[in-house]
Length: 378
Length: 134
Image 1 (cartoon, each protein chain N blue to C red):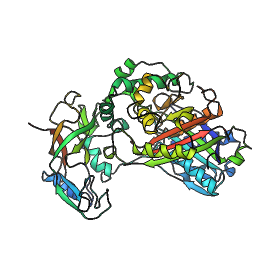
Image 2: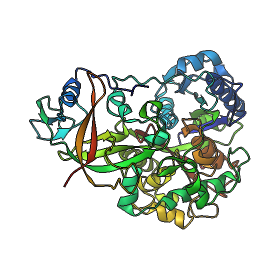
Image 3: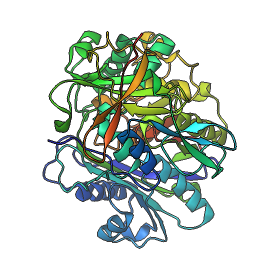
Image 4: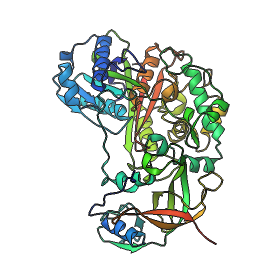
């Protein structure tokens, strides 16, 4: 049911960026404590837990939570969109009443970061790793030349995404990178994996965030302005970039986005604020198109016309995004935090009068997607 | 540093055995006649278990790629392509395009390619692709 569940607690870690004195687990716990303080709750008030990166078992135990509902869905950076969707269903079903979702990641300092060993017998170990893939910049970017050729998109168009994101970051005191940049700056930054330059790739930072959800009925008794879950979607597609069905469009984005809009009962024209997970400069382009905001190949024009930039018709990635705000590895939590701030009216670059926010995440290398639509109107 | 190599599983052994003897082996469904990759003992299109292994032509076209300027230590010091090719039989696979400069000018999307096998160990030869001749 749209708007029957609300976010009543939301916070990021006390610090963002470079945090060498807090472990991966510690970042989860710091964010959780901040979210509980935001909502005015104690651990004994929480009866549902969801997380990835660390086990929900560990996070619950360290916080002193006795859960009646547990979700450890781990599909990469959009896992938190899926957690939120699953939590809303669990609360509606009566499995639990108050869910805590946590994220923490020592992506830069690598303090106590759980390893992700890739077996040489795994599908990727057999059919991708032998050919030299390593960091996401050598995988997530592989489809892009096909996209550029198919739709007449240029390297300058990719660079323009980074430039606009930096404009938003400049308005956000917590953003890691705030100095204005130009298209030339992006194109002249160090080559990582052609056609990808450094400034087309996300940051690698430390941080975390946490959310608390409960029923809309109970939400009225909290000190925070309720942010209602209006609709949601999720999907996945093949786990390896080389198996992606169509290099110019994400099936998971399309399936997740359609489910979210259908469940919210809104059209694209109703959307006031948009977050599209930008691990790399092409993701907002794919996202705008695959979520149905424009036709295939038209997203480049949105950037040429500055429609998502400050002063544009549909403000997008208003925190500065993974390209300039922060990116610990699984950025989805930070996109959700910015949507909640926009709906509360507390964002650093607040969109005046915004009533509906769409928040879309990606997991793996185009392997999964989650979409959540929020509103501040009951 | 030796290159990171695959470890075949029972479901993929035929593919790596084929590479060892210079044959690119695909699987095809006897029920719906479609080819697929990576290997598995059933058809991903119709779920039939009635599938066969057959030697593919080795012909392909370049679907998309990057040129990795920060090569993994086991890949040598120079920038190299990481590519996905479309095989003539339909499936796609990741590979490296070799036998030509590793530059945007030399690596044009849709260029015709031909498989070559590069021996890495007694057990593993990797299927790489070079520009097709003629």
